Image 1: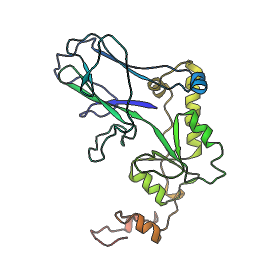
Image 2: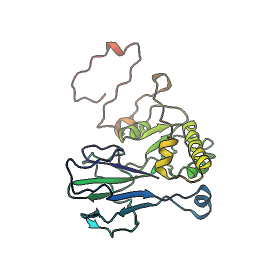
Image 3: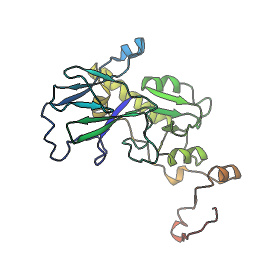
Image 4: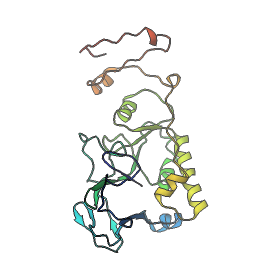
Length: 259
């Protein structure tokens, strides 16, 4: 799993102090993760743990409005059910499928720490293509679903990028469309990190061995034709499919009629 951190005004992977927050000391709080080895993960099922320590600060550290004990590593569990609401549209990972906690340090500085779990939908693969997928995803701490689960699935894996309801469900929810080669590259990235450093936490792996970015879809690799089932499924959406040669001739007008 991955841990992401960000502020409401600066929702990225950079944590900065509130403007002019003099209540936060230079040594105020540390946020660390455990460092299980690949062997301990395989044999004992160890997992990356999150710890927060208040360095005996004057104004304290609060996790979900409760002040934690000072000078002690406090293990934090992020409940999967404690997720962002869709209408908030502020979640750092773009979807908020792993749960989060609110942290307050000092008097003005607050942020949310989000846990990110991957959930891979294999519905786009044939039975033969799925062989070996389950072992691979286990290596990268990823869940597997046989069908796309709205609000849960994060990656749709396909052998070829064909336009379909599954593809649009994935893209509409902010999911990633990937292929088997991408998944193998992720596994290789993880293995290189474990083998080269011996012990690594999730944040360090992301810095030194970033997972490959899902490839951009090219028009030449996409085939799609609407049918009644897809029209019903996407009744609230509007899609247009045209050739590259005709693209410049298309005039878009406002209409309530389904395409």
